[in-house]
Image 1: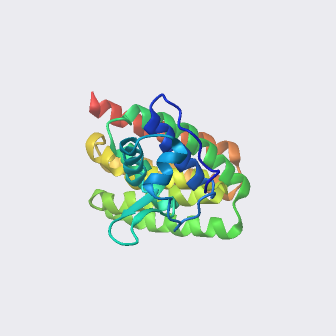
Image 2: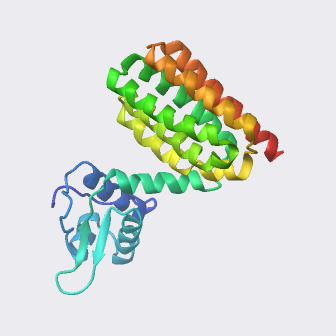
Length: 240
């Protein structure tokens, strides 16, 4: 590990230390489970004070990149920077005031339009069968009416997540899973739901899924954008 780190830049020294260690962990130069050198050695490598180093380690621990263990055999150990940890951070961003209703609508319209178009190009027969099974589940909720809105929303999330998976790009799948897992708070706060909205939501999903089954990329993309735009407008109206 001796040659991985170099003298920290003097502007916001602790941040440079954070950046160097984080890059080494995420690139695999420091494998998960490894123990970082002792504080004294790290201070020598970065040519910085112990207080600055400890601030950097505290931030890395908050990011769930390292774990500080106390006692004999303790120290800073590298954690597995897996998708679950990253998803938690993304979820916190979505749940924070940093992401407005307008931000979410703009993001979803562009991304879900692209994802639905790709899904229509790449869907296999098995993919279409799984989507149809979800639509049958959504249809049962629809038949029960507005009292089953909560159940319908959960199926709606599954449909969107399945479409993202079918698109074949793990980045789309990862991000949209995080978005749809945390989107309920926006519905609860901004969306008035009645029989009309339930029926519109179901019909939108029906058209999108049919377009994917028919490998109609243009219709799938256009309808996904329209679906997001329509319900975003409903929420904006309640917000006013």
